[in-house]
Image (cartoon, rainbow, N blue to C red; front, side, top):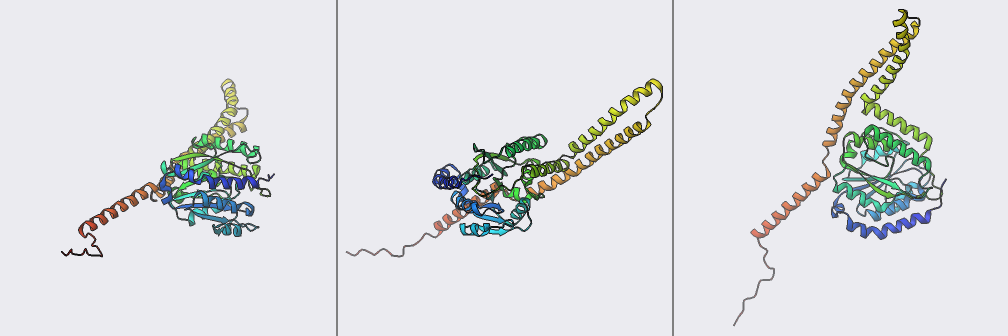
Amino acid sequence: MSVDNTSDIHARLAAAEAALHAVGQQISPIIRHVDIAVLIPCYNEAGSIGDVVKSFRVALPHARIFVYDNNSHDNTAAVAREAGAIVRREPLQGKGHVVRRMFSDIEADVYVMVDGDATYDAASAPRLVSRLIETQADMVVGARITEEKAAYRAGHRFGNRMLTGLVSRIFGDRFTDMLSGYRAFSRRFVKSFPALASGFETETELTVHALELDMITAEVQTPYGARQAGSVSKLSTIRDGFRILGTIGRLMRDERPMVFFGAIAGVIAGTAVALALPIIGEYMATGLVPRFPTAFLCGTLAVLASISLVSGIILETVRVGRCEMKRLAYNSVESLAAKLERLEETRLTLTSLRAQALAENPPTSMFPRRRRTH
C-alpha cells in the first residue's frame, strides 16, 4: 500500500536546503576536504530518484553521487542523470549484486549508501559522515525513527526487531536497526567487504562483517518517511524475511562454527540420551536389550554428534585463519585518519619550505624607490 506523500517529500527537500547552513556549523569542517561518494542502488524509482539526488546534492555539496540502475523498466536512469547523478548499470538482479559492483568500482574516502525511494532523510547525511570521521568509525548506521505507520509497516518493524535481536545474541549487541539501508562507511570497510549476498540480505552481511572484525561502529537516529504515491516496496516481508534468516544461518555456520555445530551435536546427543535411558534402565534390571534397533539408533546418533562436534572444532580453526586474512585485507587499506594526518604533515612541510624560501630570497619591489634630490 502506497501513500500520496509527494508534498511531504518536497517539504523534506526544502527543509534539507534550509538546514544545510545550520548543519554545516555543527559538523567538523574537515568534512569539506574529504572525498565522499553517495551510492544509490535503484530499481524502478523514477518517481523519487530525482528528489533523492537533488536533496543529497544540497546536503553534501562536495560529494559525487552515483546511481546504479538495476534493470529498471521505467526512466529511473534518465531522471537520475538529469538531476545531476553519475548513472551506471548493474545487469545482475538484486541489491546484493549492486552493492558488490558499487564497492568494487568506486574509489573514495567515505561512502554514504542510501535507497532511492526518498524515505531516508538526506539532511542527516552530514551527521553520519561527521560521526564517522570524528569517531574514526568504519560504519555508521542511520537508525530509522518514524511515527508514520505507512512508512514502516508493522510486519517489517516486527521482523527487523526479531532479526536484529537474533544477530545481537549471536554476534554482539551493537545495533538497534540492523536492516537500515542508510549507512556511511570508511574506505577500509568497503574494500575489505566480501559482498557474497545477492538480495536484501546484504544489510545483514554488512552488519556481521563489522561485528566479526570488531570494527568501530555507531548509530545515528534519522527520520524515516513514507514512499511517494505509486512507489512500491521491493521488500517482501515473508520471502525476504526467510532469505535473511537463511543468511543469518549461513553466517552463523561460517563465522561461529563451534556454536553452530556444537548446538547440532548437543541436539543429536540429547536425543540419543533420551532414547537410550529406558534401554539402559531395562538392561540394568534384566540384563537384556529388548529393543536392539533403538539401541543401534542411539549408537548411530552418538557417532553423528561426535562428528558434528569435531567438525565444529576443525571449522573454528579455519574461521580464525579466514578472519586473519580479512583483517590483513582491512589493514592493507590506509585509514582516513592516517591519510588526513599525512596530508596535514605535507601541508605543514610545504608551508615551512615556502617560508624558508621567502626568508632566503625576499621579494624585491617591481617599482624601485626614487632617490630624493635636494
